[in-house]
Length: 360
Image 1 (tube, rainbow, N blue to C red):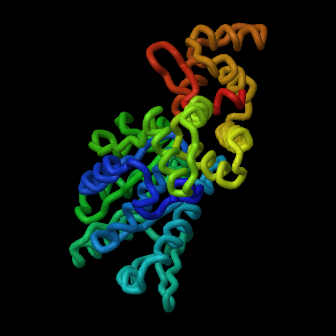
Image 2: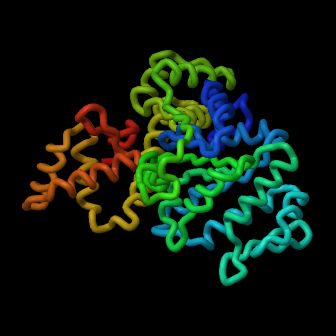
């Protein structure tokens, strides 16, 4: 059902994402694929549909990193535990195949990874074994890091090293990195940093865009048809004008309409839900940036209807009653762009999502 707010896992529950699905399927033949798009555009759903449809052709490990959004930093232990969970969802023969590797113990149907001491698991060795497993079975092994920008918080361990090793040497191991804070994904991968293990490596990329006006209205119309409900075009237009083409917000509206059977109530509830979610996400963004909180809020207020760099600098200086360094102003704006709260079109900065403006 199109208006089911839970993540989609079958193709029939997705709307107009055939092109994106086909692109990802083509590009997982390369070592690393980036699946990027704004929050709630359906990245996770698209990847899960692909996983469910291709379990005979590939072995999938899925790591959901969204749980770390409220964390200031991650440790090697956190990543190892998530890998352990992913392995425990796999068939026993896979677990038996990795038995004997340092830092891995298998008891019955449960696998345990050791994350500390001399006997801790080494990811490069694990990736080696996974590629060998894929080669023996004639299928790719694909590791999905969902919301991979969270990996930039990893302290004390450079996960890019085993990933770069896999890129260069392991023909049956593939990675998918999804991300809604697009610039932060690039920061994590450090593709332009000569000191980065992944410097100079070519990666494929698939962008999941919001729907345009026409597709948004068609999505709503199809969803209502599934529920045998007829809705006037002007109502569908009003929904798009208020929440834009983010599939998640359109889905919430449809779900709320079915529940409330009232357009105004459904739209109000959707906007309130959206504003609350964005506030929480902005609070998460500020973790570790508390010293710049007032400045970030000032920038978002100035830019909610569009602004230029000079407008931001002036607003901060007026609010603080003192001069602010140009480089610092640029850094603050770039952080908001990389976190996908703002986008830049020509010289204008504006919110990436219509509901962001209502938060500030």
